[in-house]
Length: 174
Image (tube, rainbow, N blue to C red; front, side, top):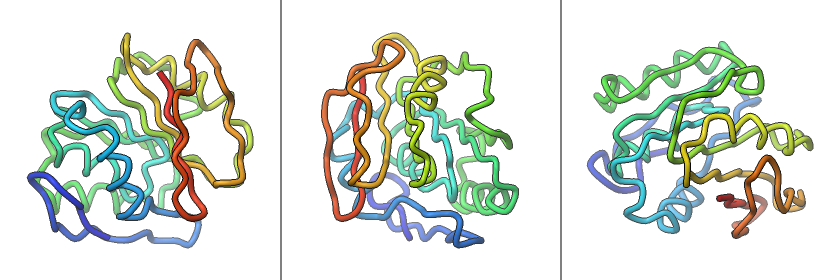
């Protein structure tokens, strides 16, 4: 696993500490950021269900000014922190050790990336929490298994696009 593009391009990242963590593949991250393009520059990003932190670190590499990582699995915390340290971007990152679904919101992020466990079928609840962290005109992206139908709308967010890649898909909301 590595950073695909930007100022940190090629940096190798530590993999998951457990089989319970399914990191976003290099290819899917590349697809995600190709779609987002230069709109990532200067943004505040929230990487929920962070796992290894690869998506948030890719955002920093491509110009995001700040990334908040949410992760509840204590086995993943040292991996996220080690990857942030390896990339030398500690000043741009905050790791919250806790359950995103129990968070109180208010992060005011331009982009919220969600990668809940693939067996989580309650994406409506996840979107409701994401909306509380979103800045006006912000976007939400959910990574999910291909076969899962995501809500067309929830909490004022409207699905604008779905991209499929292998067994995974990305649903974009505004």
